[in-house]
Amino acid sequence: GESEDFSVNLTSDEWFGVYQMAQQQALLGLLFCGVERNGHTAIPEELLQQWSRMYRQIRKLNAWCNRVAVDVSGFFGQHGIRNCILKGQGIALIYSDPSVRMCGDIDVWVEGGVEKTLTFVRQFVPEVGGLKLFVHDNWN
Image 1 (tube, rainbow, N blue to C red):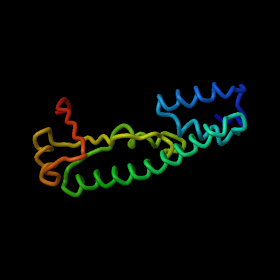
Image 2 (image 1 turned 180 degrees about the horizontal axis):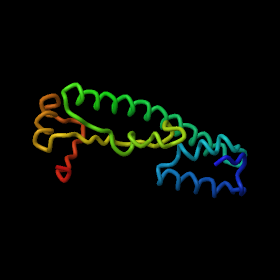
Image 3 (image 1 turned 90 degrees about the horizontal axis):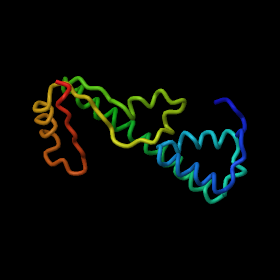
């Protein structure tokens, strides 16, 4: 919102609870924006430092995920394969600041069906290693 102050005063324990809930709901970065904007004098210093570190890590990870998403999409496109970044990085643009969204994997829709896609990917990544490849065949 546009509020310049919190509507309630939270105790230290309640702030730790807010942090835990934000972490569980993958909202740490988004809520920290509100903490920065509305002041944080009531937040225990230890928690504020931890939250600030997480906020910076979220921003760095988003920058990296954005680069990877562009690279992956571009790679498929260069080979004439239509694709689309879904969910996570693709929908982050609806956030007022996309860089504060907690990200995870990158979901890509690729045209061509399961067998064609797997054959293509295995040409370039014969041993998948750390890459997790989940294929959904229900979009053919």
